[in-house]
Length: 368
Ligand SMILES: CSCC[C@@H](NC(=O)CCC(=O)O)C(=O)O
Ligand SMILES: [Mg+2]
Image 1 (cartoon, helix red, strand yellow):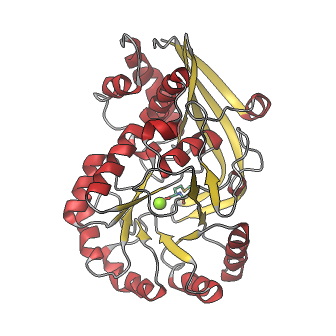
Image 2 (cartoon, protein in one colour):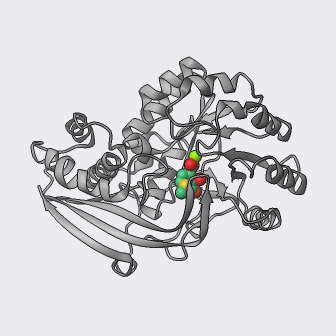
Image 3 (cartoon, helix red, strand yellow):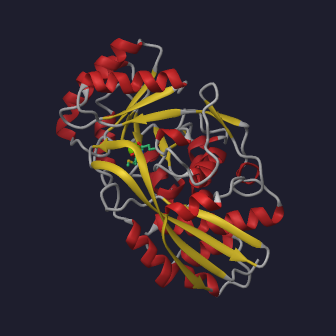
């Protein structure tokens, strides 16, 4: 499957409501989509990099630049680009895992569409639908938070994740636990907002029976996460710290976490995401599928990954309407707290041409 060219397409996706985390507030996603064209057809990938390098060091303009200057040209030398060969071709370039993930996903999608294989079948899915959690941002007040959580619980989400930061943690968690009872699956995500000195304060979350506390400390400190994990009853889950299967192995061996949030966009694509799944499963470490506010394109691939047997906790695989009034694909709609795993070739979904044209802010064709 020789690649004839790659399109870089930017789309502006306004959020239905501001989404606030410990590192900032999102009101619109400036999304980079990658389309790989071959004589047999095409494939799509979505870059999860945010507009600013606040979640991680990558940002969307930088991802577009590294794709244009280095990553796409590297595929030109390939006799025929299957996903594994493409992954090897990109390996010499350091970092830029979100940019790599977008391109490799598009190559994999093209390859699977050409062979009539779904992402779910290729990755080894064990389920045809997955239970869905929802991520709830930091709010202006506890009453507003309770209203938002009530809405998501009414929609059927099986797990609620609350964003926290210093000054917005114990009180909102207590309020949600008191309002919705002990049966609500509840977890928190700090996005690296605390330090080890906060351990006594974070230990106050232990009384709420949380599934996990996600990324409490900075992404580059596994040793301190291990020290914190020894002082908490709540399991520590890592997100930003895990950029590869190698990172996952180090985190597990150091005792830095007992659960991992797997985001294919963060780790360089679905092949590496499956490696992390396989490693964690072999070590008895639970994984769940995280989210980066993906459009229906990235969401489709994430659902296929979330259906693998080691994904034993509900992921941030929400319905399209959690973030977007109009998705670039047919919307993913929650059904009894679950989303169906796409079964068609490749991603199993396609961009809606009219919607894609409406949200597109730029396109760039890169011949290969
Ligand atoms: C803009 S925040 C994106 C990163 C964040 N993602 C979520 O909270 C889930 C977002 C989603 O539902 O896609 C995380 O750190 O896990
Ligand atoms: Mg997170």
